Image (cartoon, rainbow, N blue to C red; front, side, top):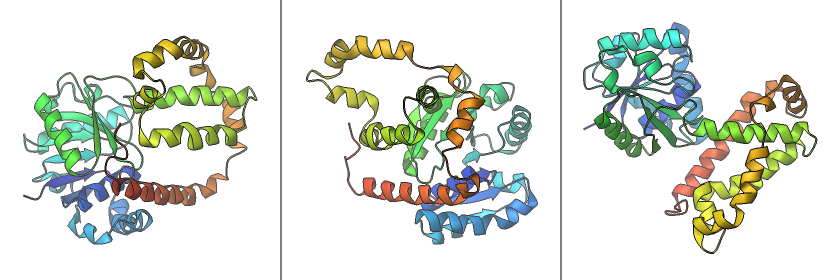
Length: 305
């Protein structure tokens, strides 16, 4: 049976999710509150496929709907990609909860709002969760599945199964936490990176090279837990015994929130390409990420610990 998916909000993330589901064979109904956005979205989707190397023929499975009601009709999964504003989320989820069939799962792509903050008073709060992707999800497959205290475990089971079916990599969380997993990790790395640059210890280019050609290259194949398991003869326990005190000292002295300042922003921005180049650079990033995804998918087991 073909799955029917509703995509609500057709910005960058909404369009990327549309490609994820359409290329997996799902019927996709797409809606955006802005009429002009709906009118131009198919052309933008074609361009998204061109950049990533996806077959635009999959877009034949996509229907642009004029109303929210039409988009939700018959959908078993809703991927919402609206603005990161609590008032908008509350209004939108109240509407969707009233419209969607009882078995329909309502998922948000939010990277900043936990589900309980906008769904806690709704009758259907048990079918609402966060499915937070990494931008852009059609070339970076990890999806953080974060339940609210009210989310039904069977909804989480269905969410995890669907993400695997459409070739995403679900990370199932057990409870809500600010920033989920990826952004909490990213925040810590960014804080120390900005601090090292501001202190003049390394240039922005040198910092990026350290990650891109060092930690990042290794972490493409395995995460930090699998990495330290291989960095000492006796595995993780041996690693922590040998290097734990050193790592603890470095962690205790690392930068925190104080690193995120206007001064360091200006310092780093002065070394970056002109903001006008961002769209072209983003497309180049997406091409390279898509090529990496194809390379990894052609080598089963390459990313296994």
